[in-house]
Image (cartoon, rainbow, N blue to C red; front, side):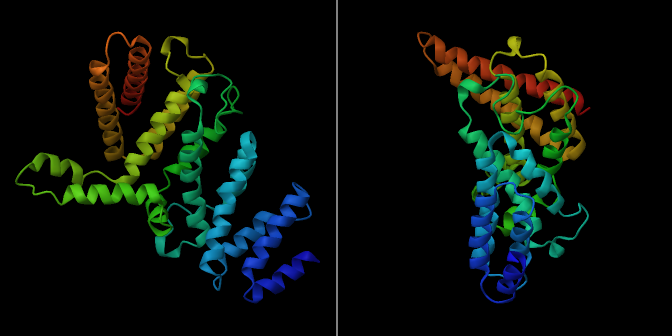
Length: 295
């Protein structure tokens, strides 16, 4: 009965009411099988007569649900992965739900990384939602995660939906590209080869590697090793040669920045100095392992 009512509202101009009802019903019924809230959110997203503001709110709802789901986030991801566009689908054929599903994983990953406590880096079992339920040989969630963030339509989705981080990086790169190449031709050539999405991906992989290994490489839990190995293997499989070259270059520069920082930390500040030394070691380990796999 409620489905018929919602369909009637959808035919009118009441998508905002539909969204409010869907959210309320989902909250009341929780996981009740008689009402598929995700179906209705997708209907709102892909409604050709849909209101842009309602579509954006519906998209944001997915992110909020993921955050609230905590360590059960893969239950939501299992549904959202069916929304992903085929890798060879032309961008002008993307639906709103296609773009929303793509942007979602970047938003979720970046937010959960930002909110992850430093003290939990290297803790096993991991407290990070995307790694928390990984066990033994059950590493297919890692495959899904990397497949998702490396989807060839990601740049288009982030551009279309106005991802803040992506556009900030793009603007910064554009400003650098406007430099007079007569003053520093080599620098400008390097900048011209850089893409905002590759910066985002390199930093995500670096942070995930740090979360798994922590900052004491000698005390890495043995169960972490096959997971981080699988993570890097999937990055190699889902990236092209230019991306892999960029990742290695960026991580090498990153460890160099830590080297410079360490030199400026007074010897008396032993704890801070050691923390920087340890983090640099982890980045070097990432660089070493990835370089070996990328050959």
